[in-house]
Image (cartoon, rainbow, N blue to C red):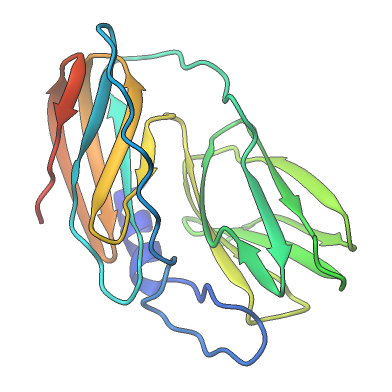
Length: 215
């Protein structure tokens, strides 16, 4: 995943508000995520948690753990879903697994389309019309950031992060994050906070593993 591309995508942002009467805010990426209940560490895997920088304006900070050695990951347990409700993409920021399907739905009572563009190449990933109750599956071929829009309602937009590793998180409004079931070993930690990209190399041990990343 290109660090420059991801930093640029987070810096320019996408307007994640509803279509009706809202102005684009280039600093807004997502509403504050609610903190999930703490996971329980096991003797053979780690629960990696800590604090990362908070981005102003309601933007989201994304945390990705990438194993330094080649690693085979199990298939995703559940298919991520992005819906269209009340002229808004929900969730406005979604992390998906590269090469595995994500679902796009239309639960509104109006026709929408889903237009997805890869930030790295500016090329279109797909563009499909979705009538009320419609759904479409897509597997992203490359790691990276993808802009999501509706050509029928230009005020609608969202952001997708595609990552090969399942060890990802979106920090809450206080910068707290938690990633469970991480096998011990050497990792590169990538934190994308607005226009700031922070990378560290770390050796993760089993159990509760505290990993704070400062700017």
